[in-house]
Length: 224
Image (cartoon, rainbow, N blue to C red; front, side, top):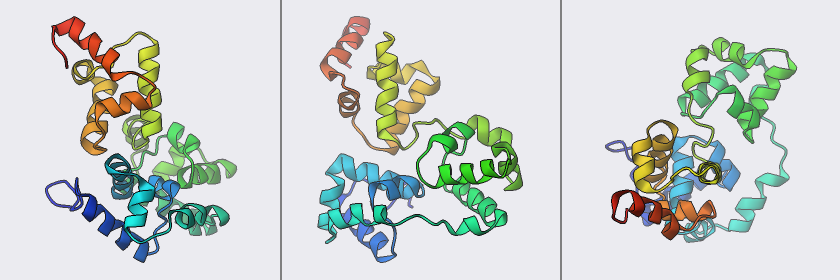
């Protein structure tokens, strides 16, 4: 990472290069695999989808999208940390270091490894907050400020925007920028971290960008 950005930032050719490198290292390049991995992988997946399409990116990297997508689904995931509580705790620490959200609500509902970890400790009657402390983390901080549930999940982001709009709240650019709190955090994360254009996100939320911009015009007398 250079200057806070990955070397492939905004460069489709370098994204393809990075995808090839990850495949050579044996990384799971399926959509679910990318979404459950570290921050770089999640951002790469979402930026690649914004630039072109994940399947097309895989093809450009000389890979078979169908094989990549279906391969991991045929295998039952057997996480190595299941062998001992000590390994499971170490994995929690690693996921936290990779910036994954580990609040109880997210860990419980998330698909993949986080959910598996939550279930692992739940079956052993160990509260999630206690597991976080056992992993050497500040449980209060992780549970309260571990991030929003929609982080790195464009579908969840779109759902959140649709929810606000259904309640009559403004979701045009200016409103999102100035609202503060969750709205501004969501807008900044979507635009700056994920690189998605706001109009595209609105369409994914089944909203018409033109009508949304009309809300802004009625407030400040100009298109936003």
